[in-house]
View 1 (tube, rainbow, N blue to C red):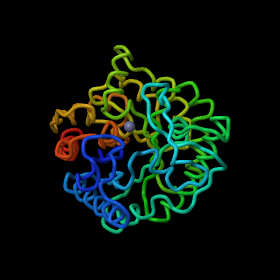
View 2 (view 1 turned 30 degrees about the vertical axis):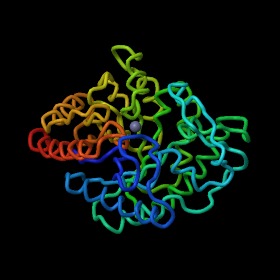
View 3 (view 1 turned 90 degrees about the vertical axis):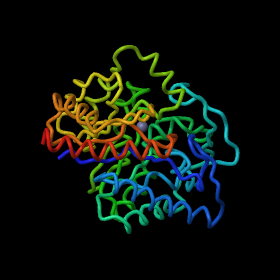
View 4 (view 1 turned 180 degrees about the vertical axis):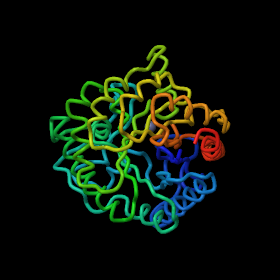
Length: 339
Ligand code: ZN
């Protein structure tokens, strides 16, 4: 009960990439970079195991960003000429690559880090991929001329990689769809269908992560505009509840999401965000128990997993490690008190 896991990314070691920032430039090149990514992946696994995390991940150590990491091995994308684009409904600007032709995988995308992680942990292994809607909101298009059509093209490629990850021995495949919280009405129209296409035929557990973003200024400023209650989940949860996706990872700790909305996800495993990634204040195990207890009013306890609100990529490394320890210790305490 109350198994622990993380949303996805962890900070990278300073010898691999510039610390404390998103889209951090690599500090190694060529074979050194490949070796460094693998070493950092093993380190990420070890840090999670020591913190008592039950379902561990690669910490996204081998990708510069959770979306663009997947795009790097796809034919039909021009990475050489990035363009500035407003993403998440113009919440912030990012330099993004452009789709210039039919999309096709050049080969495996995440084989190295998935296989390295699998070889070095006996715990359950989770692997994250960006969701099709979020990808289509983080790339410019000069070929498809239709966002939905492009998103479904990405869904097919995601499915190809997801099936290969399953063959690598991954136990949970999670699709990250922060765009679901922005384009809420399009989720039921096509977002869920694209997500299900990405997850088609998988026998391992499937999850979707929907958050209010990394703890960067553009996101914390946006949250200020959302009012006293964040009700985005209310629009999208009914459609997710009807989908074949089994687990839903949501932001709870220090958020203004009314937790009664979790009742809309009847039957799903809920990855309750008990660790705030937008604050450097480290939670106590008691804080973790309190968030789990609050979620238990609306979710049966056997359906609750304890997780981080979002990825930790831009955080200080020592703070992220302390937060992981709080997550592990908090779940132990919760099992004792509430289990
Ligand atoms: Zn997130």
